[in-house]
Image (cartoon, rainbow, N blue to C red; front, side):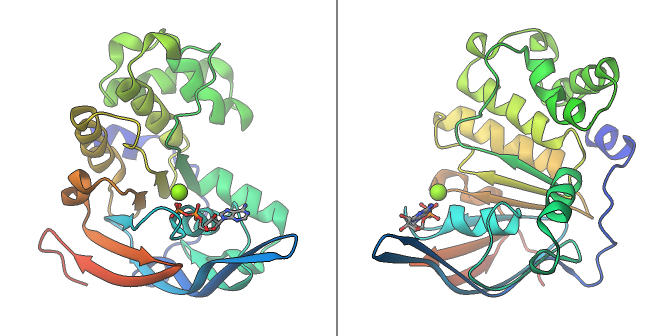
Length: 251
Ligand SMILES: Nc1ncnc2c1ncn2[C@@H]1O[C@H](COP(=O)(O)OP(=O)(O)O)[C@@H](O)[C@H]1O
Ligand SMILES: [Mg+2]
């Protein structure tokens, strides 16, 4: 099934990976300032993640997980440090170039799905392509194809309220994959789901998103899904304190 995704027309335009690293962070620090208070959310993060793997980013609430993946996804600027994604140094390109890079190369899945309530599942999945000015009928046809691959062939015309939480998250994953991003970032995608739906969603992410030339980062503090990661990056207090490699993979 995943081959169908691979054979869709490629829209990604990042340069080929120069090294084994899909993601590279060097001394990434992020400080938030609100009035007189300054919060150091990230404190000198160094991290290399290869393509072809699913990396889990874990750690207690408030340790900086969302901040780190937002910087990696180009949604937030670091205060200091450099970030390279798929061979492009995000810290050295303009805001407009970053928007363009993100649109072509990065898919984002949020904890709360963020589906548009008035649109069907197929229309929700098609939105990124429609925004990128693809013809609507083509976009929706491709969305239906992707929904089949995430096991929702019979729900393409359902509204979000007619779907379970797990089904809505599968729609959100299909939406994040429709432009064939080479980096998929998921922020606590199983947090609002029961154990079974959470497992199904993680199996799906592995099946459809883990490809040799792509990188996947999933933030979670759900220890039940730890087995799905090739690599577990543990954070505490804005720092990475441990990286474990699982599933017999080696660097
Ligand atoms: N926009 C913001 N303004 C001020 N502080 C923030 C902002 N975003 C995050 N923080 C703070 O940065 C720290 C890390 O937050 P976050 O990255 O959301 O953690 P996590 O995702 O691991 O729960 C927390 O102390 C949080 O309160
Ligand atoms: Mg978070």
